[in-house]
Length: 85
Image (tube, rainbow, N blue to C red; front, side, top):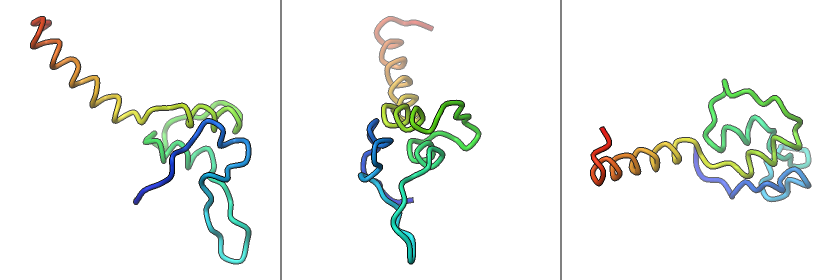
């Protein structure tokens, strides 16, 4: 819950854009699973690549629910214009 800084494809290099505070320890970077959650992917989403690749892919990703919303709006407009269905 809340807001986060933007996750970038270069997060794998040092992870300094988003750090998680830890009591009595150095801050840590997000795990690939946490990056997936931040981007709106469900926990059931499999991450079959290395951590480096996962950081790159999630940093380059678009939030799935946003894509769905935009696609539905596009279909609605196209249907109005071209009577697709």
